[in-house]
Image (cartoon, rainbow, N blue to C red; front, side):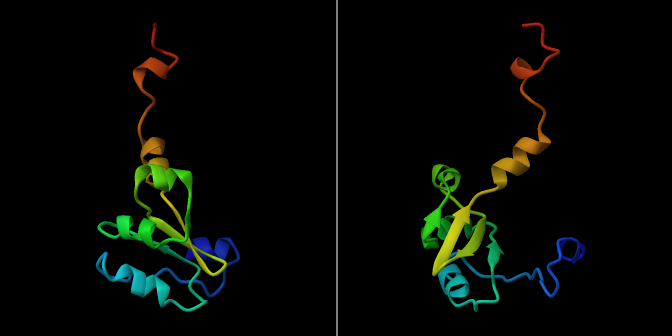
Length: 101
């Protein structure tokens, strides 16, 4: 992938693995050391948070994780969905500068 090359991450790949939420712990837990992270889609996001050994406050607050990153002997969970959504929507009218209130 071009993004990996740009970051100097030669030999890295991004692969699609289909599994159910119930299979997620075995898939991620059985991944070899060459696997540094997973992007998780529904319905696995709740299972990803439960599986992780640590998690960000944001993932815990949301109650789901879409990102798992290898951390020491376990996996660290985060949820970047908020970043994606908040980056696409305009600010509410009450916080925009063109609002006369």
